[in-house]
Length: 207
Image 1 (cartoon, one colour):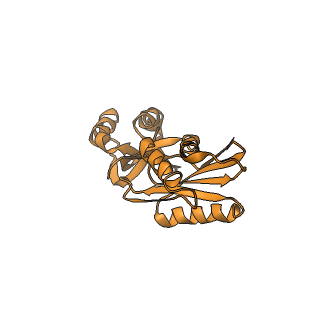
Image 2 (spheres, one colour):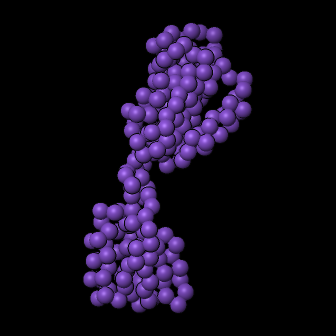
Image 3 (cartoon, helix red, strand yellow):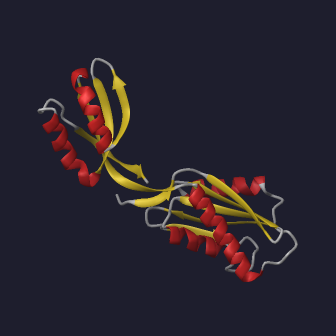
């Protein structure tokens, strides 16, 4: 597992240049199939648009990547959008830029700037985040220790699935490179009464 940068949520932005209306969208996706479904939905919703250009990148290293000018002059839409994804260092996303032509030609340079802006603004609106490999731990403690342990856990990782029954059961995602230190810290602070148990690996979201 390796860290990669993606976006926190979906987003849409809109602006007008020389009477042409541009709508930039960014979607967080996990597979090419997801990306193409998002693209098809935008095309369906904007079937009356002049162009629906796109670029997507899938995988931690962007191993699956495609783009399209969708009828704009070659190299003026999809490729600048893809370059924006690479410049922003984001993957597992698709950006779709919809254009309603306003009657004024923008020229090649103008198109490149417009489509680059549509992608860049949508990505920023979607809030870029880092996905980092984490170790998932499970642990149990009695209520007498929970008041002391909870703030410590929140400092060390992301709490998940806290359950209050006869004891407090917790799952916590901790950055892999801090996993050993986390285990030692919990054992030390609880005098060996709480033992974190590794429960696998997952990605955690970090600003």
